[in-house]
Image (cartoon, rainbow, N blue to C red):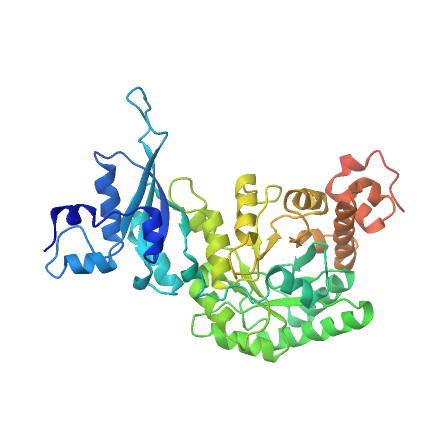
Length: 438
């Protein structure tokens, strides 16, 4: 017999009880005017598991007990007393526990369950998700991560340098290979396709592109002793993604790239979990803004681009910074980096690639903020150098060296002509007090 008290508490639990009972806890921000935040929270929990807006015949207490979500906490910010007056609707923080059994290690269903229908319910934002250790143990996460990337490239401590082929599209494999060669010879560690380049388009076929690029990679290694990763874009229709990855590796690719937020985190996990795909995976961030850029709706950026992508197996990811062409708030920049890197049982940390208008002038800012376990990702900062891509790559490496050594960028530029030339172009006013190198 179900007691009245059991019915009252069936939809509730303390967080510690939820964790011991194999639940994942989703945390939500809701700015909403309601007569009962408790009823609203219970309605959200029902909507995302066993219930709907009306009682249906097949529903039962037994189903709700096994498969239903539970409200674990409700906080009002600020915690208002009777003397508080504000025009805006109240802001609540709601935590709901979802039983692991209903989605397993299936990221598409995880996201559907935690934030599916309610993502369109008004000013409700998913701001975090807490996973018990027994759930995280089901995931592999990144194969390489920070240390693995360093080991592959043979670089122990300095920040890595990434450049994407520019222009974004329109070049032939022959043209791209020449751009690759010059950038790699100048010191770029990772060269990637632009996210706009199709995996196997008619104007730049996968086989021809990868084959030519990897020939250049071998040439550069013979000349400089430095390896270069080529992250080839394999994004495609879902039925073609794995085949693209296999073929790219067959042709010699030593890294692959997936537009994760259009292809899906399930596709990323599919690639990362495949033992035949034993190369680093770049998770590209394009389209993430559609999910994670709003204040009162969507998903928190650190949760989405950090925790979820890391869980799915991304080894490194292109992301913004506060000093670029698409500047993001410093708090988002720093917190996302922490979600990339902080200890998470066996899940390896991802490498954060600072991108989007990264120039020689902002290298020090990124390193001062995050340290040296980062990637400086520069397209225009390399290929836009007045003396070409090789000189542009050298100037970026020189900017990195100056920042790591603690030497003022302009002082370092006095004895490094590639850096001086780029700094002059980027900021003529800064250079007016220096004798320009001939």
